[in-house]
Image (cartoon, rainbow, N blue to C red; front, side):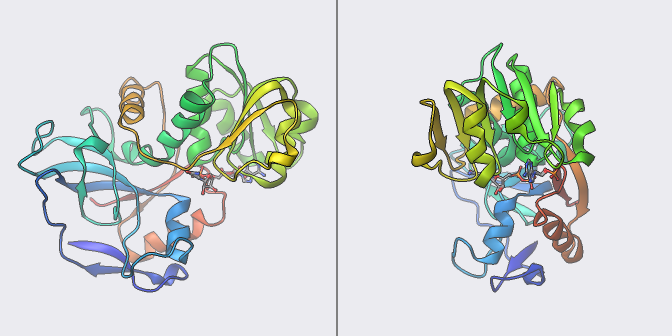
Length: 302
Ligand SMILES: NC(=O)c1ccc[n+]([C@@H]2O[C@H](COP(=O)([O-])OP(=O)(O)OC[C@H]3O[C@@H](n4cnc5c(N)ncnc54)[C@H](OP(=O)(O)O)[C@@H]3O)[C@@H](O)[C@H]2O)c1
């Protein structure tokens, strides 16, 4: 099979298309033929060597495809099932998948949409639902609402019945409106900390001054959830419950995202679809590292 392999940490030129052995089928795993995957910012960090790891390396965390082989211990999936899953080494034509990290897709769901959701969608879900516990009537600010994570977070907060403000650059204001944001904010022209107050929840996808100033717009005992950096305890005011988390896959959130996707209650925002070539995957990484992809960067295999 073909895979994008990193032999040395570094720039996009380290992403090279190679012929490699397909994964060995273990009894408690299944093999999935990939139709689509996505680029997440963590793939870029891993390519640069930010987390170390053994080389050669294949990165990627999102799976969308068809089951082609099933281990003897797997009971919930069959050959031919269309699935979306959390995975590893997903810049490859065939991926070994843990059935506890996979859900079946309805025939109506496009693989390009499914590939946008596992890592980014579950991160948004954990922030808005599991940690911030957003409820109907809550006033919520989602920073970076045009991003892979933020665009799903805005939609989930709306599904929960919240009033939602969200920040993005000027060119993404219409996108924020289309996602249902009640108060789109162009962070290049308006300081959110001057315009908002008394919020129940802030979801911080940016960090730095954005996180620091977010404390000011929260109400007493409000909730701040960050995926960018650990909140500075010295800056915490108003008894805000502030926390950071690092993504970990959870089947129940993948199932809920799948239900919303099937019912068209959730629309993944696709910035660009690339094909599975060395040049196009390198291009996708270049766009991701600008920090302004404007939605998900999808790679298709077919
Ligand atoms: N802790 C974890 O487990 C975890 C999990 C997933 C992601 N992350 C991190 O979370 C961040 C977001 O991930 P992502 O996949 O959504 O990235 P992304 O798709 O690259 O989106 C980043 C978004 O941030 C917006 N942005 C940039 N500067 C901003 C500012 N000052 N104020 C408001 N918005 C701003 C950009 O919008 P404009 O183009 O409109 O400026 C862009 O849409 C990344 O740093 C990623 O590494 C962490």
